[in-house]
Length: 189
Image (cartoon, rainbow, N blue to C red; front, side, top):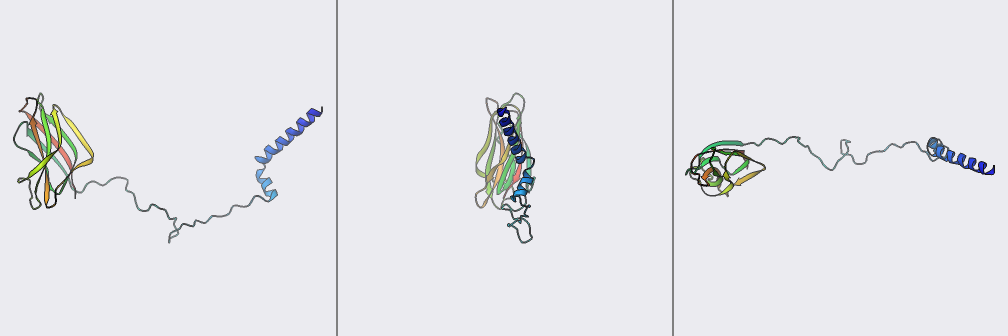
């Protein structure tokens, strides 16, 4: 019998603690003087207009702006021919963003993009010289595309402008036929 009384008393105490800690906690806190009414908080980091100052300031554009001077080019090239086609230029900076190339069925070609330079006063690429291959596709037998999310940039030396040419050389014993070259990008500064 005494055991039941002790268990009953412990159960009563446990129930009181549980109710006091959950249901009646606000009432108990007020009765003991521990509860205090909410205090208004005043932001200390304000600018001259009363707005909250933040570290990062400025505006963010959600979409990138289109380049100011875009270009695009199509060139039909004779495979194994001795002429290069002007793809872009002249400009101080030529940025290439995409390239598409294809060859006639059953043919192979070595497609190359070549940068050469003219005087800064020139308005065409007729006198271009002294350059290098900047991109090439070897043994091309069908259509292919290449995208350059970070543009392939051709920057002319001081006092000159760059010209971008396309060429289609024969490969694998194929020295005839036709290749198509499509390129696009923008002129930089």
